[in-house]
Length: 463
Image 1: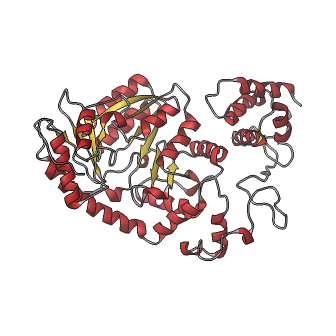
Image 2: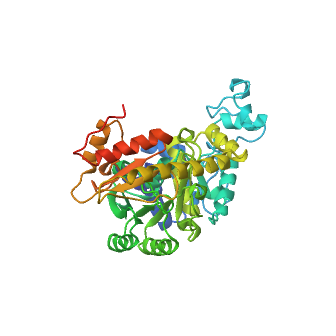
Image 3: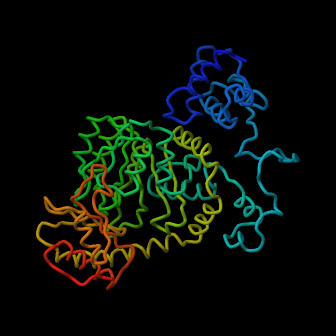
């Protein structure tokens, strides 16, 4: 076995574990292969045994080397690039016709659920069987085709192979961070942001830098200045229906934000809410429609229901391939059954009908909330959401959102204080979400919150 190639791989094993092992192995072996184009390449089985690592890890590393054009995959032993490529059987491939698949732990038809368990999705018999099996790591193809058309209607040009399905936006961002970031890298995010993002960045050891967001929305000048100074590895923004403020960034602000963030060299990530959720007037085009370098992430959680747990990531092909490799290595594939469920709901028009319903209800509830907030003390301000079901309340200087939240809780109303959604610990903002109740219950709840803003006054609790 080629000694220097094995030594390079062993060095990768000892290196600091800031990237997935397969990626470190591929990087180390790539350097050796580029130095000597005639060097033989051992089989994944042989090299895995020599290194004492899982064969699947070596296979993933070899796939990355093949993607770079350094080797050609074929049964038995990889060859140098330039020879006819024959992809070995893997988790995403089917065995040749007439062969018996004793390699994968996948059930045959007789072991699949019977009756109407799959038939209600409107799938044919063969399609139903496919949905019950392990799937393509990129996700259920019919849903990716549907999403490609949906994104095109928003001006985002992509194809099904440029989309990977995930278990929601949080999962999409987790995979992306695994693929492109290392501990110690800097990510710029809105401050405040949705409460799941700060802990996710912390898990990955990412330094978070907050872009100021006030009740009027994101401060584009601050974002540009921060990006120029920090040169962040990533920037994650939500120009349409920012959470928690519900604001929509204006056209000229989007142009300036896009230029400032891309000029810094950051990987720009845009969380996209379906434009049909915006009330009053259509929003400007997404950032991803203006530049193909932008990575777009989204989900069906806000538009259909959170329990569906289906999201997506779209972006430059090379980046999507890297994210797919991470997904394949960490969870094999998503849930074809859930992905097919999302596709069936979209194909039947349920998504569009639900979006219409949510838009009408968001308008009604926003009116209730803002009317009740009219009784707030002087100096308290709030955002003007353009859709969805939350707004941001800004508190006067010296006030504590934690104290306000505690007083509201004593009255039976729970709100989210600033530190729970801020990467800088901001204590001057509160998220008031109104998805969980409407009508008189919502009105009474906001009135109790307003009372909690006046600590000297008492009120009957909600419970």
